[in-house]
Amino acid sequence: MKRPLIIAHRGASAYAPENTMASFLKAIDMKSDGIELDVHMTKDKALVVCHDERVDRTTNGKGFIKDFSLNEIKSLDAGSWFGSEFKGERILELEEVINLIKDSNMMLNIELKNAPILYEGIEEKVIDIISSYKMEDRVIISSFNHYSLIQVKRINPRIKTGALYMAGLVEPWVYAKSIKADALHPLFYNLLVPEFVKGCFENGIMLNPFTVDDERYIAAIINLKVNGIITNYPDRAIKIRDNLGGV
Ligand code: G3P
Ligand code: MG
Image 1 (cartoon, rainbow, N blue to C red):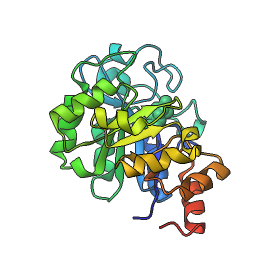
Image 2: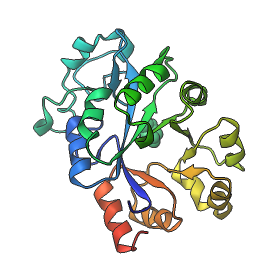
Image 3: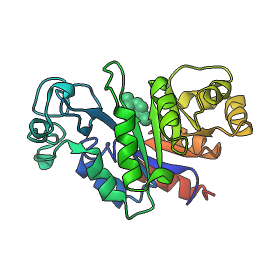
């Protein structure tokens, strides 16, 4: 695969409602190398793909995901808010997305949304699904809750983890190693400080910055030869990478 990998953020979410089948199919159509998605847990412990803790912004329902059963959440319309042509899109289970890509060579970045609401046992449940599909080598689990990432490594050290963060930390690779993370997933501004990328690579820490949509920043970050770029516009990023002669 070319580098950096182009990872479709919540699917190709600039073009279709985020985290739905429509956005994941678009990401595949656009030949993204990977997909990023966000996972929460329903009250009957199903793993579902949605960004917010609540369903209000992206569906016709109201309330916290933790208070819905899988059946109830599946009855919501997760497409109309984005455009009437997407009416009938549903909130997906994580397993549906794994099924969608299992026979491809796409990678999957599963973001555990495990704060402010703490879903007890979410790490174990996600890892069980990954293992049952033998996808350990194609998945990276990320989270802003780094205790969850430590827990992932305790359960299965083979599964890669990426620490999400926003601040302009100094020598974050030292921290990444301290929590046994394989990668940092920083807000992309942090990469524009030259010593940052060098320090990560010298210390064996991968870099998958988010969310890079502006063409100038996409080009600048591709030139830094990071591992992956998380973007809402995978088509745009692929085009720029290919024009730059991505390695
Ligand atoms: O994983 C990158 C990015 O998705 C993190 O932020 O809020 O879009 O999930 P958010
Ligand atoms: Mg996310």
